[in-house]
Length: 166
Image 1: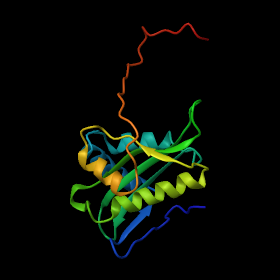
Image 2 (image 1 turned 180 degrees about the horizontal axis):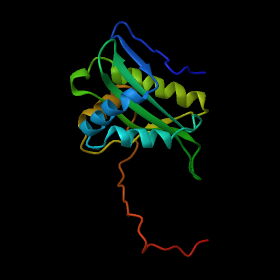
Image 3 (image 1 turned 90 degrees about the vertical axis):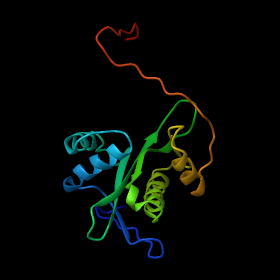
Image 4 (image 1 turned 120 degrees about the horizontal axis):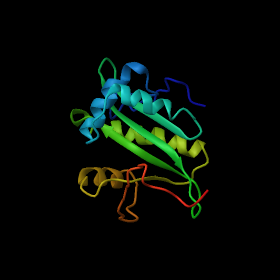
């Protein structure tokens, strides 16, 4: 089983430690989320992580170089549906612009894949915005196959939305 400060290192590519986040990381995690186009605060990150406390359903890892601020993070969860077996799904992956192409993303994915496998997932998937060409190339270089293009639709939950299902 994983320890709180599990370290995965690859000395040939980078001296990067992959570990679970701690409260001192939340502001930098928020800054990185902003680079991905999701502006938020450290308090937002703290709240969201508190909602993801079930270690059998969610995990988040951060990556850091010794003595430097965080350079990346990844979130993964178990995705379940009626029509397919459960799978791991990467919910977010960001590596700081200045740390890209140094092996951090590869290490973060390896940690996520290991977690998913330990939780009985035979497949791990990721959704990536159609405009993120560099991300698509990164995933393909790391063994991910493009299986479909889809659209996501959302609707705000408001008081005028009702359901006839009880």
